[in-house]
Structures are given as C-alpha cells and as structure tokens.
Length: 450
Image 1 (cartoon, one colour):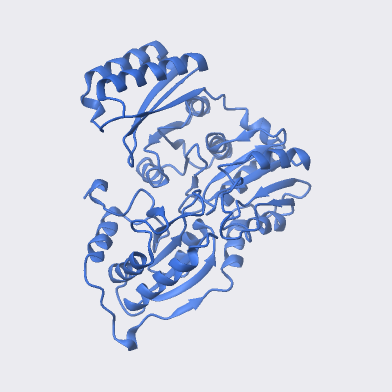
Image 2 (cartoon, helix red, strand yellow):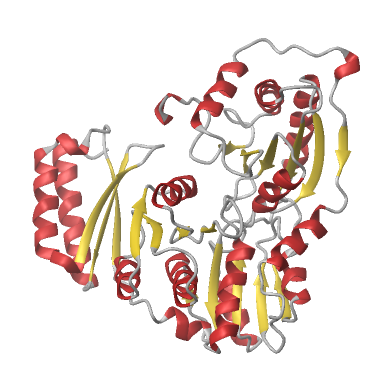
C-alpha cells in the first residue's frame, strides 16, 4: 500500500480550500463517520477534536461531531488548541484518536483535517487507506441508545501549559529575559504567552487577537518581518514566531536576525550532545542546509536526510534511533519530550540552552555557517521520471562535479502540480544561481516548458 494510492490523504492529513474537493461539510461528516467506524472498537471509544482559529473550524467541528456520533463514538471537544497539544491530550485521555481541524500555516480560506493515533503519532498509511475505503460505504447510524455523546474539555489549555513547562528543568526559569511572542493569530494565542510568563520571562505578545480571518496574515513563522521589528523596538532578548497551529517555530535574535529551523535544530542537538544526552543521529530533510550537516559533523553528529514532511522526519528518527530532527521551515521534533513537532516545546529547549550557557541566541545560531541556496521552479508540460532522462542526469552530474564537496543539487517534482523544483547549494550565491538556471534550461528543453 503506497502513498500514491491514497485519494484524499496527503503527507499531513487532508487539506484544501474551504468548499472545494474534500473540504466541504458533507465530506467531513462522512469522514468523521468513517474514522469512527475504523478506529472505534467498542462502545467505550472516544475521539478528541481540536481546531485552530479560522472561521470554518466551527462548521467542520460540527460536521465531524455528527459523523462520529452516528458511528457511536464519544467526542471530547477541546476548542482552539495547538496541533501538538492534541497529540499530547490524545495520549493522556487514552482516546482512540485525536483530530485537528487546521490548515497549519495556510491562509484562512484553507482548512484541513489531521489525525493522531492513540499514541499521539500520525496515522499509518494502512489506517488512512482503511478510512478512505470506509468513506465509500453507505453511512449508517447506530441505534439511538449507542449514539456518541459530546463533552467539552474546559481545562485543555491548562493541561497543555503544564506539560510544556514540565519539559524545562525544575530549577530553571527565564527571569530577567524579555521575549516577543508572535502567535500568528492562531491556536497558540491563549497558550504560548502563559507558558513563557509562568516560567518567569517578560513577554510582549503579538498575533494574539484572532478574528477567524487573520490567521497567519502578516504574522507568524511564515511572515516574521513585524516580529523582527518588534524585537528591536522593545529591545527584547529574542523573538518567538509560531505558525497558525503551533507546530512550527522560527526565532529572531536580539539584532533582529532570523533563526530558522536548521539553526534551531543544531542548537538543540548540540545541547544534548554536550550534556551527554540524546543521540548522535540527527534527522533533517532534503532541504536542510549543507552548513547544518557540516556543523553537526564537527560535533561528531551525523545528519540523515528524509523526504520533506514532518512525518518522514519522524519515520527516519525511528529508523536511525535518533531523538531530534526537523525541517528548515521550523518543524522541530524532540522525541524525548513529545511525539510530534511542537513549536513551544522546541522554543523551550533553545531557551534552556541560552540559560545554561549564558550565550545569546545570536551567538548560538552563528555556530552554523549557512550555504547560499538558489531555488528555481520549472513549470513543465508533463511530469516524467527524472531518473530516466539522460540529459537531465548528465547536467546534474556535471554541476555536482563542479561544486565538489562544497555544494549539492536537489531536484524535487511537485506532488500537486506539473512543476520540478531545482535547488542548488554552494559557497558562492552567483555560482549557485548560474548552475540552477543551467539545470532548469536543460529540463525545459528535455521535458518542454508549460
């Protein structure tokens, strides 16, 4: 059973524009019923539902609730909560599954449905295929005596705040430090500021006034420019930018400089290494900067590269026995703390290292020397197997030989559109740009530009 056979599920659940395809109330109702039928083994089954702050979340929450109830499953409603909080609470409630209504860093007009197993991990491909098969079956309703009941969990935020704080050593706090925290007008707006405040920091809050439409709008980890300015304005020690559902983290140092997922991953991995904890097996992705790999090697750690996507990072961590992994975009996974990417917990681990060492974030991030990357998207007439095109293989080999050990080439076909993404990394930005366009020109000639 391969990922290509799935009709609805992508690498992170089901996502799209509200009102299109699978992101409609009728489909989501059927999806809720199918999940209940597949995951519910008896009449004691329960499923948690959380959401981010986009306006369509109310509609899809009701649809999922109806479908699950028809399947005889009890529903625990968490309200707006970060995605990683739902993973955590699914475990502590001993629920059969957790469902997140969110489109993560996308704008408000998109939404999606993500799932966690009873262990707080992403569902397996086989389970997703079972759910897809069940969607094709006629919806039936259990006897009225067996219908699922709905409960609202009023203390969900408090439970998760305490969990986040528990990942910081008991005798450590952040008193005397000032942070600017950007919640992206998303699911962390009522959680993240309290976590950092309760650990002693002075907190300036941004992006914590969601109105259903402003999630990720000019804020958060994907648009941190206002955060950079705010750190300088408030003379803060650093800035923390989360995305709409709280599983991504980008930070800003006291000089206003961006610190992305590669640097954050290195800081956490190095901290564990110096303290004799963790593993020397670190997981990044195909997009992780070569500078990260070299910095890890200098500290006797190895970077393993997975496909892009946090589920693939987690799979590679389990395969290699690693504990820490992440993506340049800011998904950081600390398996010694939790089961999935968590922006708040990742930030706390970085802050702990700042407190332990007395270093600034700027000093810690500067231990990684990034290589310039050039990205070119080539829109083509049709998608082909790149491994079978000798002209493309030949130009890639030529570029790789000229780059030597100081660079690399990555070709990534898009999974959603006829686009081939060309990435060239090297020491000289002018050279990487030249080589990227050289490869792009060969692809256009060989495949045909759309």
